[in-house]
Length: 269
Image (cartoon, rainbow, N blue to C red; front, side, top):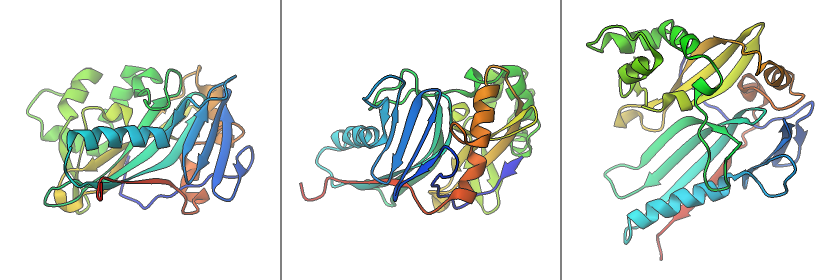
């Protein structure tokens, strides 16, 4: 299942999700999420200090960029949209725009899945799809997807018989969706969100970023269905009902134009 590019903004509400003027709060497995226009904070069980602050994360990444480009005038924006939150698992859409001295500004969007356990305020711990679902199930689901099949047609190699071989075959492969080309990154198994739960199936969305300059900043999605792991079932069902956390399926319906945005600049220094 392939989902074409879409405009997406998100604010969460209802049930256990509490509203503020520019804030959304929720909790799952003891982790507390506080989403404001000025930051996204997640605090672990029994602690007052956040496990992650997206303001600090964005600042740390900008500091690294500015240090590497010392003496250049740079300006950029980083945005975050929360996509899904179930137990210690958080997925966000990250948008980055930078006037970094090239012929054209850089613009990029992708999903990022995070394991809140072991995450620090300035360093997110990546969550890989294989940590939640069996490799064989992921391989089978990818083989059934039309975009994946189109990408594999361009690979001069035998059909992948393992997930690692599938990742090697797909990484950097470009596929055409509508008027734009998109590519699988080498870490696409980290670039996902938990979309929905139906019966014993979990739908997962994987992001593919633009592959050509003319389509910079655009993104498409691949949707795959995976068997519900018994260990995750309570968390996912709670997220489905929004009694603890939420799934991505509610994002568009609950959207209200909200996102977290940071602007950075070295100009004038």
